[in-house]
Amino acid sequence: MRLTRRTNLAMRVLMYCAVNDDGPHRSADIAVACNVSGNHMMQVVPVLHRNGMVLASRGRFGGVSLGRAADQIAVGQVFRLFESGLPFAECFEAKRNTCPLVAHCRLRVALKAALEAFYTSLDEITVADLVEDNSGLEALLAFQPSTPPACASPTAH
Image (cartoon, rainbow, N blue to C red; front, side):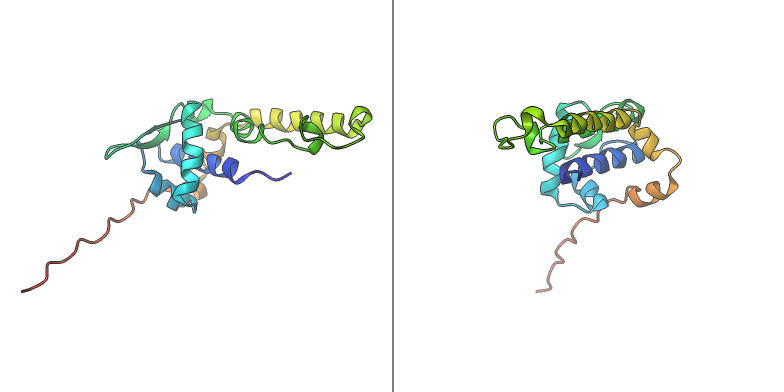
């Protein structure tokens, strides 16, 4: 099993916001801290926002911050949000399944049970569990505002 880039980034955004809970932060600053492009940020922030995990607003004083307390955001919920639309195996997708064994396959039943156990296990972990007393993570994600571009210096005439 491999997580999608979007799930991984969603968790990074949530951890960043939990570590830097002093107000909204620019997506560009979060992208730099998380080592991703702004385009990738724009794929996950709106999904997190629609689902109440972050608050996001545009404009000069806008930014991204947690939409609810870090201890109220279960990792399993985030993973389901980004991963559940993707079939784990071909046989999990009714329209595109070409496996001739599906009607009698016990592996499919076992995979479904394992996948549910995976999500259930992640439901017990919150974003707060990932960031609290984690000084290493705090040091890595500490807010460091990006420096604005230098203004053009006037030329002497």
